[in-house]
Image (cartoon, rainbow, N blue to C red; front, top):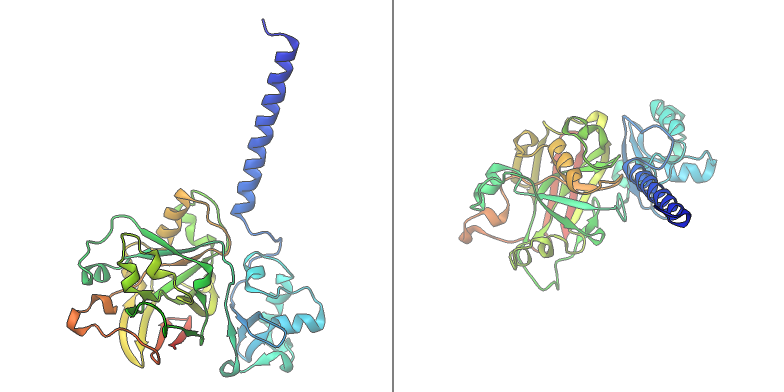
Length: 335
């Protein structure tokens, strides 16, 4: 028969176990949803711009690029001032949505012609940067590989983040086999585990052009691709992050040019694994979080897929441009 001390100990143990389970559940809930209470921004194309006061949120409008962060510093209306805040539903998004619904309310002084905008990194420290390999059959075939039966995942680090019109340094780097990879990028607006394929696209905040800039020497040095995929500045995406309500990720024309010459051209309908399948697959094995960046894979036409005698690797002075239906054009030059 158990004595009173044993019973008390069992009661305390059970209480601690329950508290631990509740804490774990709360942690999962926090990880699964944005941190703010405002509604999700819709019908917008957001970015970060460089200003004398530092990087800040901007939004594309028919009248020009709206410097939201500068407007907020002047008016103190509680508007979000970074893309991260918008993704996490922080700040007065309702007020921002109303301004965007009637751009005539935006004072002229806070509008910048798009050609004059100095872009900045969309996100500086995303929780994760996830990449998908060999996600188009023709791309797998050009490298002599069979189409994968489940997504091939690798990663980049936050030091790979780069933005529209910024350069990528290749001069003085130890390896020379530089290659381009046009990709559709998805940025998560809501996270969690075991997200169903049916619900997956509703968890995406928005989409952007991306370029999984790669070094093939490093990529093929071992069975792990990461070293060749996460050199500094090798993950540019932008210029806009277009909210998911405006994008059908399953039917987008995608093209990449080098110095004006078309090198890659496809439609995202040719993906082996759709964006919904990628999100569901990832969340089966680890927690996705708001702000996670997913490069969804490139198509055929990369330099690595060409015959050896046709492989002319990228070099300083080359200019790359990635365009995807409705998402604008991402431009980067090598230095």
